[in-house]
Amino acid sequence: MASVSRSFTRALRTAAPSFRAASTRSSARFAVPQQAFRHQSRRGYSSERNLPDGNPDVMLYGAGALLTLAAGYGLYTMNKEWFGEAAKKLQGPFVPKFEDYQQVYNSIAARLEERDDYDDGSFGPVLLRLAWHCSGTYDKETGTGGSNGATMRFTPEGSHGANAGLQSARDFLDPIKEQYPWITYSDLWILGGVCAIQEMQGPKIPYRPGRSDRDVSFCTPDGRLPDASKDQKHVRAIFGRMGFDDKEMVALSGAHALGRCHEDRSGYSGPWTFSPTTLTNDYYKLLLEEKWAWKKWTGPKQFEDVKTKTLMMLPTDMALVQDKGFRPYVEKYANDNEAFFKDFSDGVVRLFELGVPFTVAEDARWTFKSSFD
Image (cartoon, rainbow, N blue to C red; front, side, top):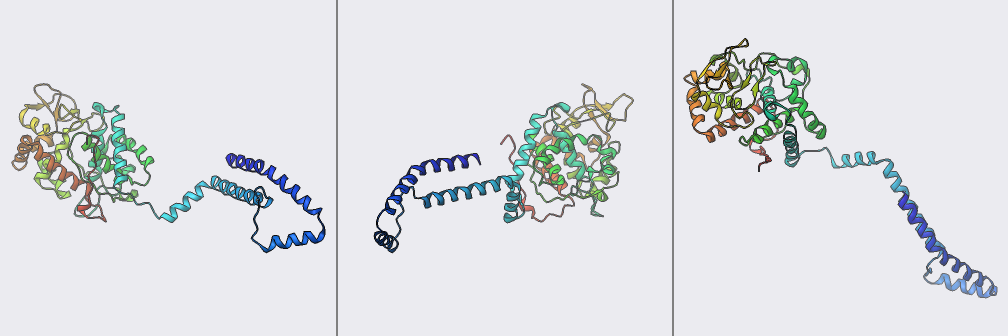
């Protein structure tokens, strides 16, 4: 508004000398005889009117235009929100594209880089655990559970023993949700898992959006996630309920290459590998190559490596090498990291999509660029 007022003042100052000159000429005309005045008037109105510079009419027209612009600018500045909402309505509802989700991915990756105040210097493993646990509740018989809903936001499911410690992952992603309010919690949590895998040097994980957030009535019952104290029968029962076969069960277990257990959460303690923030096939190598013995302590039964006593394995981990159906896949992945990455990626994509009513086909999945690309 200040700039418009200054422009209007300059226009008036510029027009003033011309206006005075025009007034003097008009006074001289009034002094001629009446007949001459009529004659002159007839000539003036019988031809196109050619107004000289500084004519009062020009000045008034210019002033009116400036006032109109000033009024319009004032209306806009006082009603920016209204104009913005009106523009959005004309454009229709926001439909996020690949580029929008890539921006969300980039923001998660940047936050992972900035926040190193977690176990072993990375929130990556706990983000993957969040995505895994909200997906691993799926039941193929009832069609319930899975990543669609983000029902871990509510106390019944968020307080399940298997989900202990995942509040930190949800808190980590909350600023991202505030930055991109259009993305659902369900899609965001899974995208967080995708980002975590890729940023920890794992394979590409194709992604499809389309999950919706649900209310507390959709919370799943406790007991649908793996119990680390059990054997191979339990592993097959849990993964089989989701529809996975032996190969997929072993491949998905490779996620234990990342992160560690905590006494104040699961009761267990320690990492599975020497590089808990980098995804490799070391998990399978260590299962086969290291000597393992029961850990002597007051906590729940777990294995520790005999050599360094710094690594641990759970009973469900050891079941993979003890079972005749599982062991061949452990050996395959221990010898071939590329094969592990392929099967792990395929299994994770399937896990993350269980029970989701997508409206786009599988061939429409997106692959995001990581910070390493």
